[in-house]
Length: 314
Image 1 (tube, rainbow, N blue to C red):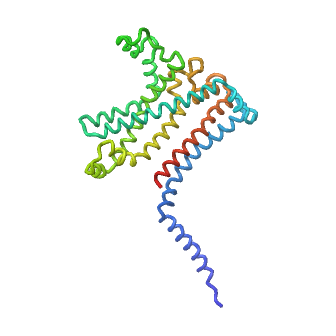
Image 2 (cartoon, helix red, strand yellow):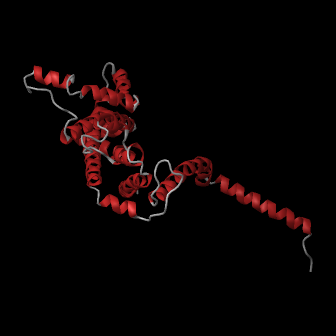
Image 3 (cartoon, rainbow, N blue to C red):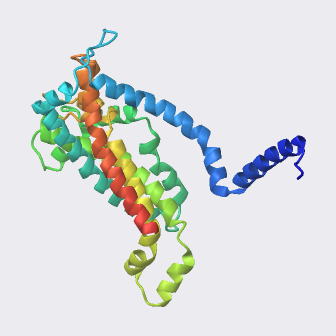
C-alpha cells in the first residue's frame, strides 16, 4: 500500500481552494454581491448605529444636557398614546403623505407624457422642470413663506383684484389653511421627481410596440394602457414608495412654514419629534419614541409595495 507524499497533499489543498474561489468569482451573482459588499457595509454602519441608538434612547428618560438617562421601558411610548398633540401629529402626517403623493404621481405622469413629445424648447423645459427639486428645501420654503404672507401675499393680491375675495387670506393662520398650504408647497417641490423618473421610463418603451398597436387600430389612450403602462408600472411603484418615505420624514418645509403651528396643530412626526426632543422640552427619550413610531408604518408600506413589484416581475 502506497501513500501520497506529504508535499503533494499540501499542494492539492490550496489548488482546490483556488479552483473553488475561481469558480465563485466566475459566478456573476457572487461577483456582484462581492463588489457591492463594501458599500453595504458602510451603509449598514452609518444606518444601524443611529437606528439602534435611537431605539435605546427611546427606552430611557434621557434629556438634553445629561450624559445618560434611566431605563424606563416603553413608558415614553405609552405617554405618547395619551398625548392629544401626538394624535393630531399622526393624523397630519397621514394627511400630508397620502394627499400629496397621489397629486405628485398624477402631475408627474402628465408632465412626463408631455415632455416625451417632440416640440421646440423641449430640452429647456426639461431642465427647468428640475428647479423645484434641486433648489435646497430651506430656500424654496422661504420663498413659499413669502408667498403665504398674511399681508403681502401675491396670491391674496391676485384674488382680490379678480374680485374673488374681499380680504387677505391667512394661509398659515388656521390649521385647515396651513395643512392645505403645506400640501401645495410639497406637491410643487415633489412633482419633478416623479416627472423625471417616469420620463426615463417612457423613453425606454420600444417605439415598435406603439407602432404595432397603432397598426392594429389602438388609439392613444389604448396604447398607453396596453403598451406604456405595463412597462413603467414598476417605476411608478418605486417612485411612489420613495415619495411616501420622504414625505413622511419631511421636516424642513413644515418647520420653515409653520413650525408646527398654529398652536401645535400642523405638526408631523419630524417637527414634533424635534420640538419635544431638542427644540423646546429637551426630552430626548420621548422625541426618539415619536420618530420610531413612524418606522412600522413605513416598513409595512415598503413591504407591500416591494412585494407588489416582485409579483409583477414574476
